[in-house]
Image 1 (cartoon, rainbow, N blue to C red):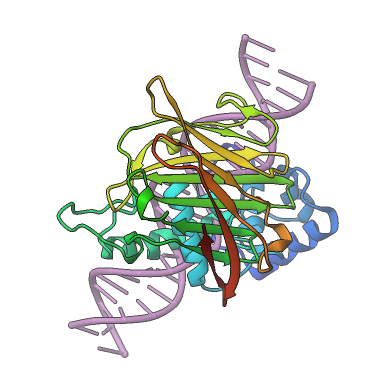
Image 2 (cartoon, rainbow, N blue to C red):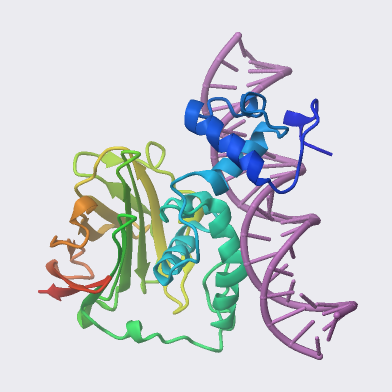
Length: 312
DNA sequence: AACTAAGTCAACCGCTGGTTG
DNA sequence: CCAACCAGCGGTTGACTTAGT
């Protein structure tokens, strides 16, 4: 059949030979790829530009990390997939050296099965069977934050439970903060998990001004209300802010007349601070449910896991 | 050794959205 | 506004490998 971009010429298909790889690498390292459709001719390859592009991106790029996925990478994929769904290219951005194709294949061949074996629906991350209520150890009341740190990717995940007296409203907060210096953009998926059954929209405000959904932020289908495996409801926000953000304030509305400020999360950009001391402060300001309180988190390093203890 | 089923993963396909003339 | 072109994406395919019989 062949696709339109190469229907006019005779093109080779299937696996790439080492000779073809060499030609492509030599051409791109010398001249860059420029317009992909012109690459095959210039590089002396009987392939279509699309095939060349794919081969370079998925296999020949020098910055690719080969080999098996680490447990840390697996955790990252699961965490980000829970927020973004099958957006493989977005997920791959959180895994330096990995391609969307690689992540997708790993998901389909390994992670999916593992989740099913754990009784979880890989699409929704919910329990497959309601009768089996999964009571994870982390669901007990605790004031400890566990930070899964990946110093290579400048990304981290926070999973915490507020102290007892707050559990009526919040069962936990999960914050995923991802930053890429190279693209000078900040991707900050934020996910709030609440035991409060009332649905409310979330606005994100940076330290200077309020960003409306229609402007820089999109509340898309991925940002809709979900349920996690413990039956609590998740509220998630995926933001793409092109300037460094010193502070993000999550503001919630109950959907009624009154507005409740649910969380004030101060997230300093981590950047080079990964692995070194830094502070991560947040407070709950909604006095209707939660007395104002600030938690200062001190950081200690335990191998690649960082544990933050909340100090009231 | 031969066959088959299951698993893996590179590559392809079709679509979408952005850009350009 | 429209068509053509392009890059990029997610779903799917199929060649190859591995495990089991």
